[in-house]
Image 1 (cartoon, rainbow, N blue to C red):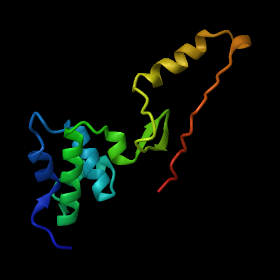
Image 2 (tube, rainbow, N blue to C red):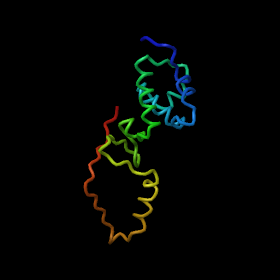
Image 3 (spheres, rainbow, N blue to C red):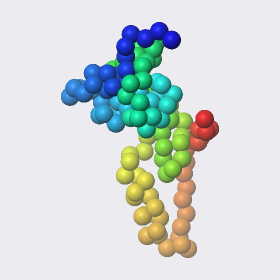
Image 4 (cartoon, one colour):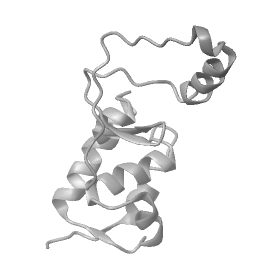
Length: 128
């Protein structure tokens, strides 16, 4: 494993400018590149990235800075406690949708409760 001294903490530090993704997003991108959890990234700031991992991370950061949504970069996203595979063909729900949907469903009388979703084709991703 050839490295040039790219550690997790160095990658986070180099991306703390105003134009870089939020630190949480930076950690998620690092976790994705390393095949680890965000918690692992936080707990292992000394972990080194290979040159290839660092290049891949840099490309993802650049795409994030240019406006590509994080779920598209990661290829999956959690919604209502389930992980879904995400591609650019998938609409990403706004975070507040998880809050509003159950609340609105409770407001509808049970005898009138119908939900119809047309054109929805999301598949939960398989556990790794």
